[in-house]
Length: 157
Image (cartoon, rainbow, N blue to C red; front, side):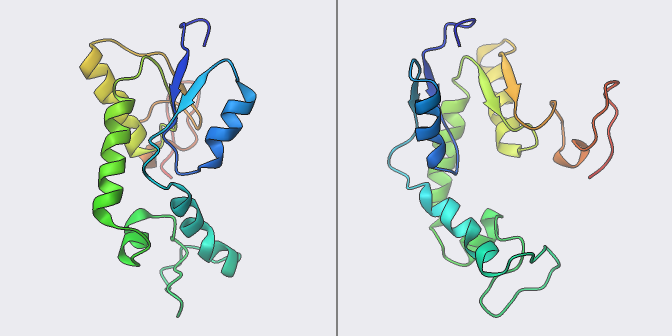
């Protein structure tokens, strides 16, 4: 943060505990997030089926209680009515637009939303931003981000 003179950090995450953890680790930085969207519901609903059915994989079978093994996918949780589509879309777009205004970027480049935010920031600011990927190098498609080697080649996930 000192190299780029960063004092304020937008945290766009589905895990509400991350904000408090970051504040404890780096008290010199001001960590902010969008306060009017209850992100704890995203994390709670994502792990609900995993707790009820440990080891249930994404095998295409939906159980009687609606758990399917791919319950982290937002489209499945929206279909179950765990939260409203308009509310989620507005929060996602706010996060995306705010991330595109950033002076630097830390995120998951295997995430479509993270890659889109970074691309928008580069286009909007007409420069490459400093970045740190938490899960691997820049990748144009999430299925091509597996097993990236030093020469840039990779395997399909």
